[in-house]
Image 1 (spheres, rainbow, N blue to C red):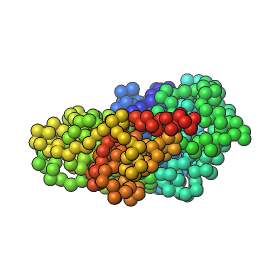
Image 2: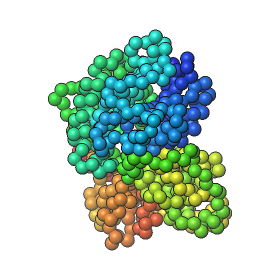
Image 3: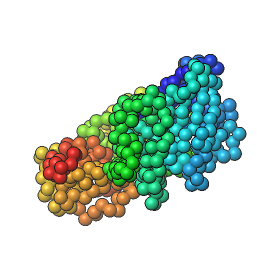
Image 4: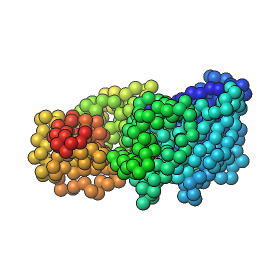
Length: 475
């Protein structure tokens, strides 16, 4: 048996290539949309991908299931659970698709995979028990848990309401999640490996561990959310629904395209290199992918969004501030960044890229003419500005509730585009801050593009920390 975890650090996402070395067949579980990565890995290990399995209808990326299943020799295994609203629609008439229910099994060579219905994160959610029959095993070696069980956490049950707009669904989902955690895992041996779909940094949970895998025994002992769920009469529902970060707006679209379908393209889009003149002559949003917030603030192309590439923020900025049908222009630090940028956009369904240019080319052409004023917290009178209604706090609601400047406005940075009508239009300047300065840098670029005069307040809000401590809360 061959088992390999494939990690995308920017989406904090794990896919799994599971292969039978006797027959050369392999299944990929929860692939991203750019499937060349998995094909290359399989070929390098004398395997061929003959099957693809999805644990659920994903909210944070476009699944690669459709790209792989475009090959009639690749079989797609997806959930038949979840009811009419959350059953996959796009592949229903295809010959190479099997809809799975709880207890159904399929084989890839000598590897047996059993579907376990684990609702809560989503109604249709499956986990996959993996048994190496070819190695003589009669018990599973691993459970691919998708967004059901993570290392140190469990999946959030609120996304159908907070991301997809299905009002009133989060509490019943949390109750189902509690039941799934209590009942579906009880019979598993301590040795069973837990293979989650996400790690630390994902918005699909609030306390995900940075360790890539775990075991059932370890999670029973040390996973706080799981322990709460397994305790009869506990406070699991209230616990799991509190403090969840606000999802980026693009999550709603990911749910829709993964259920209903998206165009199969066969690979990444192409994007030409532009001159300063052709770059300036095109319309559409600009993602400045340089990594340094100070460099961006000191000089950027007018209207550009700050989207540091080799961080999770690149996808979040695109998915929060850009419409999916808009045509994007990219500003890069180096030519070698292009593939990474196109992949990250492609993975969340942004296929329209007019072209790219190096920041150094724009600088030479004197095109980096916009700037953002920045001030450090110790040099700023935040209380006075907040009392005048000029302070915008762009942290999560949980952070804001723990401690904030009295009088400060609050909008999470991921929600600015969809809630910008809540921002004041009578203020000469908006002072924007977060918990460290990074999210405020993203927010000020967006607000500047939309016409607000902004100042980026950089660093830690010590007054917010003191207020949180006075409440007996850990900020």
